[in-house]
Length: 365
Image (cartoon, rainbow, N blue to C red):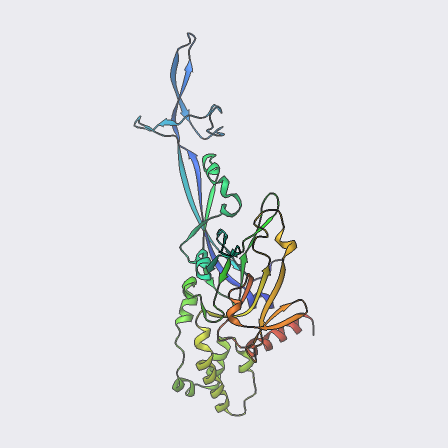
């Protein structure tokens, strides 16, 4: 059974919303009168006209008996027999991760004979979700058949993606692997990304309701100090800080200071779409593996994970039981496969009480 939005811990943490516009183009026949060349009893060719309809219209290939290219319109003028019909549909769906396609780039050798691994900035890979670009829905699987598809009169689909809402924790999946008829190929291109302050504001197209919420003014210190206890707790609850709202305060001044600290330190970041990296999963193989079509990169490769110790800010690289310190500058230059970002302004304390309570409820405790 498919769960509704926000109906589990996973959904509340990782689920966002994206609007998908699908444009379909299909070759169709025009209605009118079509002309056919036939031979009479004396072997002479004559032109006959008959009503043209979509019934029993299988295809227009040469030799099919249905390959006429011209029909007559009401004015008797010749016009092309077929035309392209375009339809558009828009739906909004939820996601737990965003899949990004890495462009294929050739590998070159340097002066010492080593391979030069190509690089691509994350902003370029994110163009799929810029709200304007239409991508061919068949491109990744049937790129070679695209022209054949059009000529055969089949439906061509193009999609445009517009992110409507981003989650507290964003998972980006870099599609490095592609299956062909014989084996699995890996794209070794390194996607360069920032470890801190990834700004995704230009990739979000919120609804009117969300837009109004974003434009809501952050209360000033004077406004906070003049609020009632009920209004102070309402500010915290509106931004999912029930852990702070439900604490026991002996004096109103304690609650006022808590709200002031929240609206100055966390709220401005929460109202933006900026993210910091919290985890990075890489798949490492020699660059030539998976490109020559003879070796499976999933068999020859291995995974590593980069995580940050929140208290100290130190990054660690882990592979099986081996753990070592690493620098954040190196993380953005690795063969990343899965990236996990945290929205700026989120604190562990803001989510742990809520998640713990929900987990206990789901487990019947």
